[in-house]
Every structure is written in structure tokens, then in C-alpha cells.
Amino acid sequence: MLPYFFGLMYLFAVLLFVTITGTHADDECPVQLNPQRVIVKYGGPVSADCKTYVPHTGMGWEASEGAVPMSKDSLITWRVSELREWDIKPFCYINYNKTQCEVTLPVTIYKTPDSVSISTVNHNGPMMERNQYELQCDVLNVAPVQNLTVNWYKGQTLVNQTFFTDTIITPVSKTSKLQIRPDRADDGAQYWCEAKLELGEEGPRPPPNVTSEHLNVEVYYKPKHSSSTETISKTSEISLNCTVKANPAPTYSWSSKHLKETIDSPVLLSSTLSSGNYTCTATNSQGKDSKVFILTSTGRTTFWAIILSGVALAVVLIISYVIFKCNASPNSVI
Image 1 (cartoon, rainbow, N blue to C red):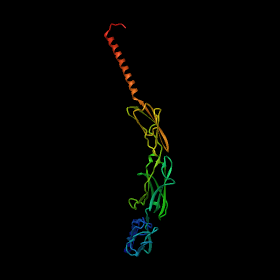
Image 2 (cartoon, helix red, strand yellow):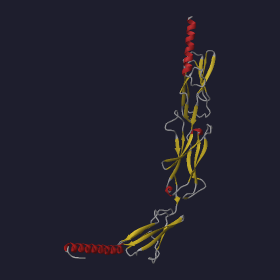
Image 3 (cartoon, rainbow, N blue to C red):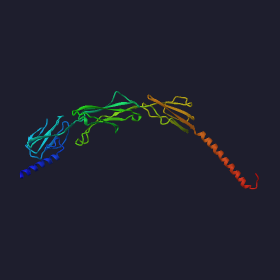
Image 4 (cartoon, rainbow, N blue to C red):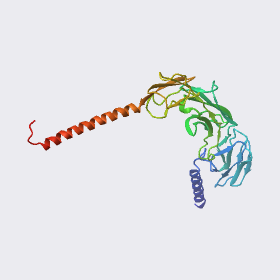
């Protein structure tokens, strides 16, 4: 009965161990790997332990690098100082109960890109407002590509992402493209891209990444005034300002029946301007836009204001006088 009892206890221990280590590739193999998955940079060091709690006749590590001969120890370590084997699949094996089983250690080897660069596709020089252009991000020699994300930024704002589904584990080069349609607000904007390796919770933190240089975007756009007309009251010193943003910088011209000479300045500054309309036109290679300044005379307005005020005062005085006379002569007949 006693040997039978110990046999049952041994079987229970094995089943308990298998339950605890049930995340392995082979749930019936009584070994435990620590860590259960390895993520290592290409050329970097790596190690993993294989442990068992059951009696055995030998256990070891089989691998193309760092193999460990069979040992009767209960803890053995697979170790490589510089891992350079891309398709390595190490496994720990154990001989027990007249059988042999093995558990494979998943290994992910990553490599950051040699370079990340940004460029425009089939275009050089300034971009024209509202035209469509294509930017390209080239990522050179990165692995594994299925963990690669290319992030596109305008300034500090994330504008797009590219993901890859390739299952190649060795380094490859990839290209990501971004379509843009710039407007005048994008003149001087900086675009750049980032290659990031998202390797999961077991991977390095923060995730490895390489960024490109910044691509400065120059946008050509025509002049556009905020309003088409502006009314200004004439004072001793008149300033009509037609300055407007545009790229390339615009030229200016003025037209009015009161002007006797050509003026190419964006500002008219004079005390001799007559009341009336003055039209300013701003022009560059992308187009033109005009604005009309309506100059009104404050003197004429003041004159009529004085006349009207005097008439109103006279009417009030006459009415007051009539009322006074009526009150002073109650018996008078009208």
C-alpha cells in the first residue's frame, strides 16, 4: 500500500506542475521557462532558464547558438552573449518517466532602421496652394517588419500611420507615402516621419524608434484681403493700408480719379487726398486681389451737423416764445 500511495503522490505532483506550466507549447512537458518569451536586439545578449520539479534522467537546451549539453541538474540556462541568428528556435528538453519532451522558447530579434528619410515624390521647389502632392518616408533595413509602424507628423501633430503585415523576420526596407493638399496656412510647416517598433509588453520601453529630418514646406498662394471695402473718415493725416499676406510677395498698384501718378507702395499716406474711392490691387504669380477704400469728408459732415443743430435750436426757441406769450395773455383772442 505504501509504494502505491507514494506513486499517487508523484502523479499528483506531476499533474499539478503541468497545470501551473500549462502555458507552454506542450502542456504535458514538466519544465518551466523563465522568461516564457524573449525579445532581444540583434547582436545583443540573451538568456533564459529551464527548470523542473520532477525527477528526471537528463535535461538540456538545443539551439543553433548556445546549446546546453544534457545535465541532471534541475535548473539549466541557455545563454548567448551576441545573438546573430535570425531564425533561432531554442528548446528545452527533459527525459523523465522513460519519455522525452520539449518546450520551445519563442525568440523575437529586432533591429532598428539604418536610416529613416523623408522626401517629396516627383516634385521640387515650392508647392501651389490646393494642389495635391505626395510625401515619401523610406525606412532602411528594419526587423521584424510586422512590428513596424510609420508615424507621420506635421509639426508635433500626428496626421497618419502606416502598418505592415509582412511575416519576414530578417531586415527589409519599407516605404510609406502621405498625400497632402497644402493651403496658405501650411506655408512654413514641417513634415517628418518616425519608424517605431511596437514589440509588446515584453519589449523595451519606450519602443525603439528612429526619426527623419524635418521637411520644410513652402506654399505659394495669391493675395486675399480680409474685406473688399473699407470706409475711412478724412482727417488731417490719411493712411490707406493695402498690405496683404501672399507668397511670393505681391506688388501693389493704386487707381483713383484723384491720383495723377502711379503709386506702387502698399500704403497711401497723405494729408492732400481728396474724398472719394481709391482702389488698391495686390498681384503675384498666383493671382491678384483688389480692395476699395472709401474716403469720406469729415468737414462737410460737421458743417451740416452745425446747420441742423442751429435750425433745431431756433425751432425750440420759437415754440417756447409762443407758449410764453399765450400764458402771459389769457384774455387775448386768437
